[in-house]
Image (cartoon, rainbow over all chains, first blue to last red; front, side, top):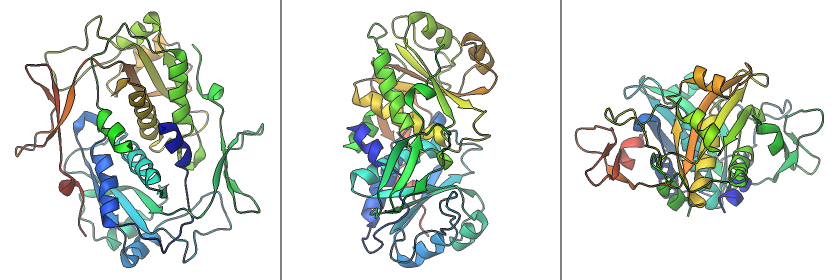
Length: 190
Length: 190
């Protein structure tokens, strides 16, 4: 069952923008991150949730989409995310945060998939611009942004080809292909 | 449902050591990590699985348990983990690995919980010693170790007290308490 959720939890970049994600839903998702493990139990991550067109737009324009697609700047109006979770490090609490952001994001995205949603996690963020847009106090560092919505695209996992090229690609039907290494290639035998 | 798994996925440090975790189970768990998201789809993480007493012992002695327990050095013989997954960064593939280790560990541990197991993730590792014990080539960096087994302790989540002390503690009945911040304290309102 968790396997089914993980398989469905692909990176989605086009959404039914008119399908709302409620504040309540976003709080439920952040609660999953709250209940997840954090290094030294420090709980130094904080979250901003957004689901209004105005704040969504402010976040959207600071994101860089799909690094491997040189001729695609991101989803057009109508296919943009309906909501966001911005993951912050509260530097008043700790210097570091281990792998907490990965754990938190995985909990949030698995929860989203279970609710029929999907998302995309960003590292390519204009963090200076986003901090300004959100009027963030200096003690917060932006770790990642999760875009959320009802997915409007099909994403499939392919076996990695012999070339070893891991770049994802989109076919003529608009299906998004993600080549994955085989299990036997990621387990190291002693 | 994912919430139930996340709630059950606590950090366990004492196990029924005689209950075996099979190679097949460990491979299933690593497969969950394989199918999970990885930054830029680079898939630079590799895994070593262990479930024999001999290799388990080699790993066990390089781990430092429960930083907040000054008078407890880790589980005694009979309560030690039955298995391990060592998460490596294959530096031939990439320089960095984003938050991939957090995502991978969360997938593995949620899968373990679904199978009636539980685990503990380590950062306090004598990495030099472990690399020697496992005879690791230089291009692998040890990111984290996940200890796995059938949990032999009860872990509960408490509301964070007014002192704000996030240290976990063990009561006289041996129940492990983990104080968690409230949802309203981790969501930042704009």
